[in-house]
Image 1 (tube, rainbow, N blue to C red):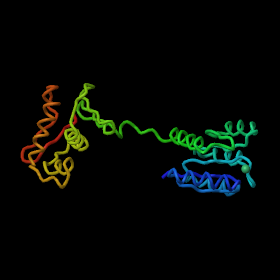
Image 2 (image 1 turned 90 degrees about the horizontal axis):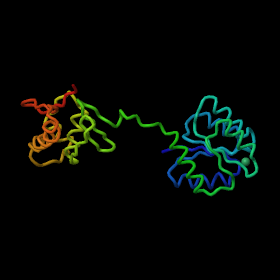
Image 3 (image 1 turned 120 degrees about the vertical axis):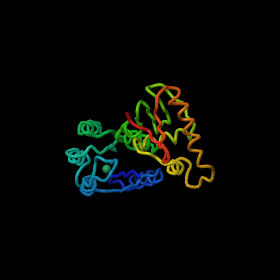
Length: 226
Ligand code: CA
């Protein structure tokens, strides 16, 4: 759950935004005063901060200035309609965006989503794409290719290849493959593994004239990374 801090002294606005954000599934903390706001912001536990500028205690621009010394947490400023200078100095100070009060809640929600998305760490390709001896298997997109040539697999074939590739260079027994791909509840024949290995070999080894999946007699199968 993403955590949002609202620093806003107008309690009605803070309460309304809190309700809407909670409804959208965010976890929300409120501060109605600058010092408390700064203290919470400095705790570093928020994914995004909604920051009013005119605050008792310490103003929003000063809070932002202090937070930016060590953190790039996304900050959206809540500004008054005529406070052009506040917007300018806020953006100079490293605010990600601002919204002018009074605002439509839909607009605020949209800006929050965009800002959070910009800050979400990019997934590295290596997390999603398995590589082995020329085969690439994208676990997110469910795409397989051999040296860039795409290979169509059924869901079970994909799952079997994925299991072998995740455990490349390790011999996998038929039972382990069965449990991983078909589940513990599978009541059919264990030779279903052999059948699907044959399908995979037709689509990979035979098609590309290579030896990718190796049978280890009496044990199971292995895909070796060359
Ligand atoms: Ca205010």
